[in-house]
Length: 251
Ligand SMILES: [Ca+2]
Ligand SMILES: [Ca+2]
Ligand SMILES: [Ca+2]
Image 1: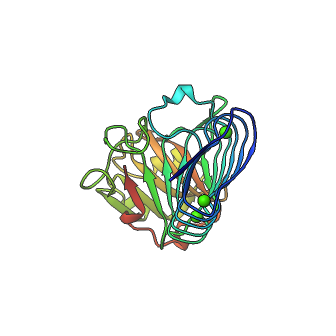
Image 2: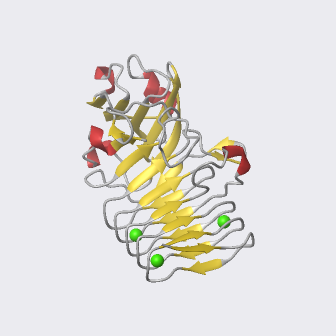
Image 3: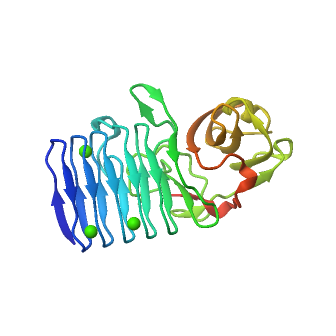
């Protein structure tokens, strides 16, 4: 593996045709990783990361062992390109595009912050037939990021799918940890939470949102209250997708 480090200035970096690891460091950087299975770390600033060919791993901010409050997280754009890519959203209003291949979208935080406010991460091309959401749980060791804040609802530990899953009419949901609501749309996340039964903090609700005009993933804070953390900007209605529990992974 070739290691390439940028500077703390804003810069444009071009990878080689081989596999390499590129850390763009601070500044608003643009990185084209080229062919190979690359690892690209945007670090601080608002970065534009293109994995291009190969099975790439793109980190919008830091990787492991950098405390959340030590990263000046910008609004990053991650584009995996061809290949089975792993895209990692952090803080900031990130936009992720998986491109062709089976892609995984990892969320470190259920409350991605942009200058104090929470802004959902956008995924531009989620396809439930081949892509997965990965949630960084705070009590699962061995994850790629040290400080994820999702509640662990994995079957079988690290990398396991959701332990309980429901898909269907909101009125029929009852305490499952991942809920996909297919029968109606809602004005906001709390309205979606209020429509289901026995929800608990840390549950994830996938629903059709009137305001965004697309599918939202929301995190339950308390009974009848939730906030959005991800938007599937290419999906207007949950019924367009073939979601299953295997789309929802905890790490
Ligand atoms: Ca940077
Ligand atoms: Ca490369
Ligand atoms: Ca790629």
